[in-house]
Length: 266
Image (cartoon, rainbow, N blue to C red; front, side, top):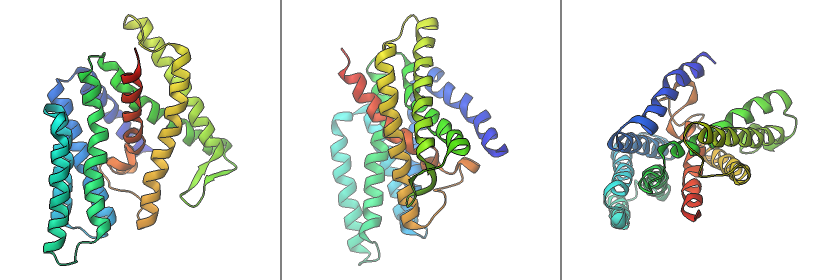
């Protein structure tokens, strides 16, 4: 618990600064770093042993994905094609040493993780107040936190025992309720201190519930990968919180959903 508190004390102010106060280039660099480290963690998880070349290129491609979305988003498909050719070309040169799941870990990590982290840059580019960039974090971390404590105190029925044995139905419901509370609080803060919210209270309840479900799917999805390859955590970057994929698994699913919702708003 001490380790978790330490990470929160350092991490929350850093997150608020990067999202709300830092120049756009600083936020972009932070997202590039997170995408690179997360993709490297996924590659090392799937490979079982450290494949330096694959891990390094996976991280580079993920970082470039975020960077290209910052500068030339219309050409990111070219980057994906280059990455696919490189991964298979490298596997051919290694004569079967590189397996298909390693190729897909690198390509999926670079494309999906890079794309998801780039959602924040696309949201900012839409011209909305940067406070709304906090929503993917709020509607992910709130769900995770409330689910943890609800499951700890009320949990009786297993949610997905073969994927994550400690998660319960009661915890899941608690996470959804916590998301609604935090979503409504966000609307109130925007109304009270920032001149009005782009989202009304009613729609926010629906958004919070949807993002709560998506956040839990994201959490369980990356737990599924860990269980398949027999690891406890993807990394130790955030101490007891694990690595980038342990801490931001839900965010990676929620951020594109928030982006889509805002793109559909009049």
